[in-house]
Picture (cartoon, rainbow over the protein chains, first blue to last red):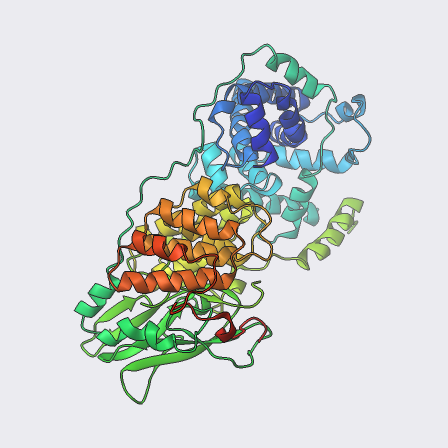
Length: 179
Length: 199
Length: 222
């Protein structure tokens, strides 16, 4: 039994603190997706809190032979989508100063700042569905079937979105290079 | 991968870098979680409850005989091959003690009694299920077909493709080898285990 | 043209990446593009399943081979896809039952055992330190006996008995050979197994059809 499945079993048997292990195991990764997807820290925080709360409530439905991360991501992706929809009128801009305000433990490497802001801006330029597909495939490294299960889109559509995302990124590079 | 475009790969790599996370975030989640009731499992025990599978008693011998392609001799194939205790490969496959071609390969001889066949080949995972790859040769006595193939140690799955003079084709499992399970592809397979350290 | 520091970092990275491209799937097989035998829709679906398996960390070669087998047998495309998916799901279950420290043959024989109807909890009993033990052989024999009509509970119980007593490859093979002959001679499969299993782990009885160990050619090193 995997660690995840074992911890899920413990929580379902009443050991609530076992959930902290699961959260701890996945929080950073989920945070990375939420920030890349939503482009700002406040929205990402909201998405993360509600994701882990909903995951807790739904733990009884987790099945051992599925990857826990993929199962969790379905919830995370939906939370990101609904937050993005609610705040669609606000401008989503990554605030680099926020990275300096945090007391992050220094064993986790912070970005150099310049590259991070650049990449985030590039990602923000992508249409949300393309960005989501790109992040799920190449940052979260899910399979197309997992992506289909958690986004509700068909595999063909997802492959198309990933391809279009890559095309757009490539176009952007060509514009920069030619400047 | 990212269609092998270096720039896109770079974006992905950069995007994969960890982000700074508030160290109190996990505790905040747990504080809310502790206010909830303990979630209940939806199923208990194994989620994957095997549905009773139909386990047909492979009538492949019956159908092969009915097709008239395989003589009754095949039923006794295993007895012929049991002389000297051929081991450990399956039934009609004889382990020929020869130096292997590759460092771990063993030459395995596949044999089938099919006196009325026009051509026979052996098809399996070792030749990508290509019916043209390993044609068998009829022995001088005429009723038996054979071919010798180098196989890596381990488990291999295969079957014989028997073509009649009238143009018919029949897939036949090796009647003297262990059976692989039915899996909806319509024709049964056999298993051969080749000795030596597997992979 | 002014090359920014970001651009130069990227160029250095690009050089590294182009030297480390993923191996194409085709290297599994002799044919450079084995899946080209399938029609495009079927191929697409099979590739997606293989992608899932790769990401999940279970073997992909058996999936490719199953697709090729289906194509060779001119099976209906839906059946091909169903068969490939069935192997993938069985591999996930095998990992749950036995973990993933298995060699290729152990994987495929465990998948076959599940597909023949052996439940996960029975398969799980083979878990643990099976180094030096003939897991593949035990599972192949168990699967075959079930295919021949021995009730699953009897077949698995008999094989597990032998397994737990530390039976060797030759013992499993010998048992299978004898039971197979008995069934072909018309015996009821379950009865045939019950009778033969009683011959273990004792000495060979006179007149037994099991080849004496000294006559078994050593196939292991050459």
